[in-house]
Image 1 (cartoon, rainbow, N blue to C red):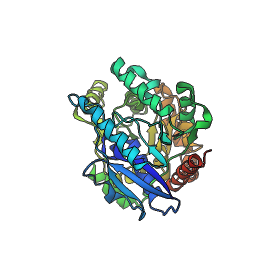
Image 2: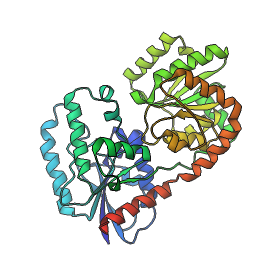
Image 3: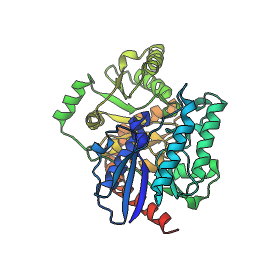
Image 4: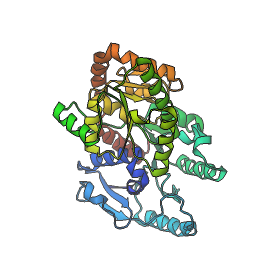
Length: 388
């Protein structure tokens, strides 16, 4: 029986509340819930972790506490050598046949050791694509590049779209045969719902209809500034006094102030709802209630919200670049995310082909599942262990 170590600690860091955390939580739940007679898993967590309560694991699988600092913390960097030593000793004592590092950028010192076969997951190359927006200074860039140097040492790199694979090949000069594309899946809760449940959820968040929906963070690549601008222009040109924009988001105070300032400058602050925290189980109803889902991101590693909207029968408008055409298939209207005019064109076009979009969206989501994601991840483990 081969011993597989998986670093689950990013699920307990700030990353665990974002897309990477969502991806890995669902992947490893699907992967661990079925018995694997060839493997036993050691799952690394932070001390006093509650992660084990959320995972169903086999009788030979174990959770293992491995102390660490996540992200650079001022005043605590002097402890980096200590945590680096703990990490090295943990790996060398355990001697796993394979180590999977699903996220390289949270645990600050994390190293890919030379004497262990390692799989690393890289989701995108956003900081390299938009360096001015994502690197505060040269030191931050050097740290990020050092992380990528660690990734190059891996036996295999998993990424989540063909688009991301091309970027990793080009920007990191990694041979294509070393990179495996494994798509994410869709939670079964994303589906067409009864109207009473939809209305109940909308009342909870004080959302009035009709509304255009988007899901966003404060990150530059989410393109929220153009979404706000396009909504204002469309609202004025259509003379629609009822239409609102709903932004499902999770903002800290400074981020919220920035968005509110933008909305006030555009004069649309009363026509836009920033939900802030939305419970996971409420999101499907919000997709169901929307006239359309607007997702003109400048870059996505994958773009799971596209699939969530499609599964809920919500027409999708997304970008014609990066991974989004690949993920959306034929079930979306594609627009130039750098053009507010083209974004508005997409919104208007939905009215003409709404039912066709919904039907094609339902067909498209059949390509994606967490069970398939888990199965293909296990195949990567087997390939490496067999020396392929």
